[in-house]
Length: 228
Ligand SMILES: *Cc1c(COP(=O)(O)O)cnc(C)c1O
Image 1 (spheres, rainbow, N blue to C red):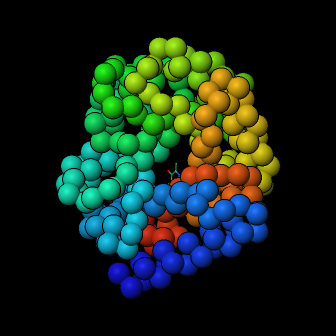
Image 2 (cartoon, rainbow, N blue to C red):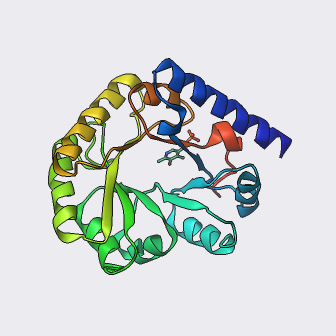
């Protein structure tokens, strides 16, 4: 716990410094702690340290932790992993925000899971690599996907764009393309201003490029246990 508190404080200080350096107000960014592969007890410790936004990338793990920790007040659960359509109902039941909407079929499945339910915040995941097999819609497809969501998925609230910087490229260059995708998205959904970008290795560059939501794991949690 002392180590966890120290790492959290250190990351938050680095975030604050990067925000200042970019001339941005501290409250323009949300720090999500990615807790994947760690036990629920870690999330309880983080909650005691004031963390309210946590991220998980597998539906089963999200569901299990969300249900076990239902008593943690004010917790917001961010789903940041590849979503399968047959798991959409479970994702919708556990997540407050889904960062990984990258095709019409998953948007439809999330909507159909609770068409009259409380709105679900979603982001369009953008693929910044040249490999179409990676998660995310190509930058050229962002507007069409957002238009589909606006027209057909009325229980989803479009919030912004999300991406992972490709390995082997300067993160700043990749995040500049994500900023362009954000402009494209806002031509269709004018208030979808969130930019989810920045992990342990590149959150300073993401802040410079305008990130509003950072997804930081190991710098705060320590190394992840084996996924088994
Ligand atoms: C695991 C993960 C992160 C956090 O990665 P770290 O390098 O540990 O900070 C962020 N985003 C996504 C999509 C992830 O899967």
